[in-house]
Image (cartoon, rainbow, N blue to C red; front, top):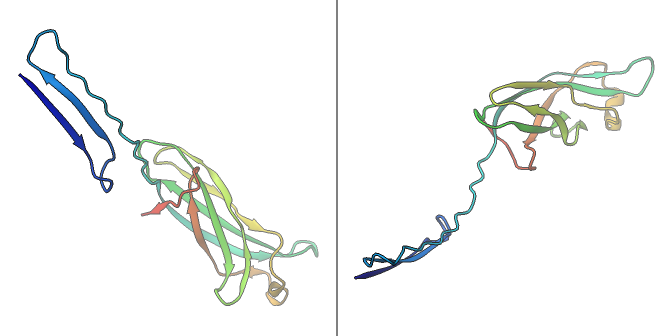
Length: 150
């Protein structure tokens, strides 16, 4: 007795094909071929930004500073994290850190760094030294993928 089978998964689920035959004869063997795509899970983290300020030191050009803390919430994998800090408000943007490397963070550990922008917009010329508004515009991982926040 020989049973043939074929399984094809739909594209919306896992994409693989399994084919083969089962035979009751002792000399026959079952044969199966499967290809399962690797499943990539998104990095998860929590983050904060603080100490956002504008400084002019010794008459030099103004520099925007901040302190970013990010915690890797993945219990199994180390991830590298990059943030984009934006200083100022939506209507009056003072500066942008670009993609700032915060660090490579072990599972469930925390990293802190100080993104800055030493080439802010001309609009900071009328802003006094001291605290300014800022926010984290984006967080990405070592693959350039957006990080899910919790």
